[in-house]
Every structure is written in C-alpha cells, then in structure tokens.
Length: 231
Image (cartoon, rainbow, N blue to C red; front, top):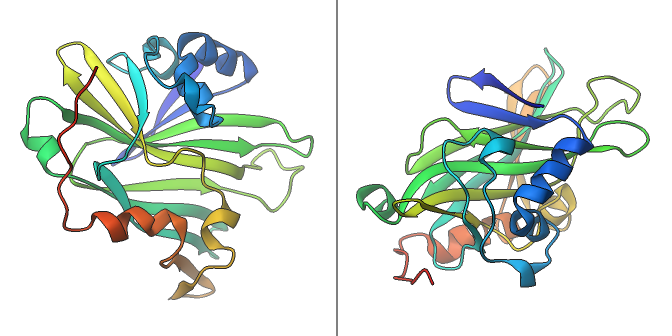
C-alpha cells in the first residue's frame, strides 16, 4: 500500500513501502520507470500512475526538459547538530509562462528519490512533491546515512527533479530535469562548493557552478521556454 502523509506545510511525501509497490509502478508506468534507469528509447506514452502515487491526474507521457521549462536555482546538503537531522534542499524555478497559460500548465513540482534503507542494500523509492505549484518552489529531502543497522537508515543513492504539466484536457506530461539521476558524487565531487555556518555545529554546503545540478540555471536564467509540439 502506498502511504501518504504530510511532512510540512509546503510539501507532500509519497512512499512506496516495498518492492511490490515498485512492481506495481513498473506495471502502471513503464516509460517512467525505464526513464529513471536511463533507458531513453522507451520514453513516450505511459499508462496512468494515479493509483500508485495517489495523483489526481494520470501521467500520459514522460520526457526530458530541453527548452528551459525549469531548473534548479540552488542546491545544498544541510545538517542540524542539535537534532542530528540531515537533508538535501533545492530551490526549483519554473518558467512563469507555464502558470499563465491554460495549456501547457504546471500542476506539480517534485523530486523522485531512491534510498538504500539497510545494510543489505535494499532500496526504496519515494517522491517528494511541492504542495503548491509556483514559479519558485522549495524541496527538502531528509536522509540518514550514519548507521546502516538503524531503522531510520535512509542513504540517498539517486534523485531526479520533475514537473508535471497539463498539455490538454486529459493529458499530463512529466518533464524530468536530467536523463539520469543525480548522486552526491555527481554534484559535489570535483566541483566548487560554499559552506554556510548556521552555528552550533550546524550548516549547509551549497553546490556551485560548474556542478551539473546548476548547468541548466546558467543556460536558462533570463530565457523563456521555446514553443514545442506534443505529438
């Protein structure tokens, strides 16, 4: 069963508890899952994933964002020493044109995350979605990677941001920001970063360009999305 609970006032958390949920998702949305594993030749029409993710609309297609539909404006790895909490946080910026038009129109902004949840390497996939769609949205990904024997162990193995757009009366496309998931290594290793001290041993490390997570920001800032067709 898919569990849905409110994490904060600004985001909703969708959890696929076990492999059976993933199997159901593969059955319901083959194009989306194959996209997650970068088998790009299968991108195209997909069946509804409404049942699996508790969406109020069906995802009818998946594609890669190529025309500055959205980008990640800032990305950081944060730690609160007082509570031992760790999380990734990102600000996602969407072309404002997609909030003014009837079609295409943004209906959801989120991130797909895969966690390793135990010492055996068992994985669990989750979606964190902004509760309200707006030009600037904040997303937070909680994780815990210290003790693989702990019941709270949640080590991030990959993640990919997306926006859902309504392109016709009953047609919704999911736009992924990248062709394959990001990892800690792909974002931080070998790239500049800035650490902001928040006091008492807490702080956040922000990725800096040319980290791949910020490539679209550099190329898309100040640009509007190009016109495109949905065949």
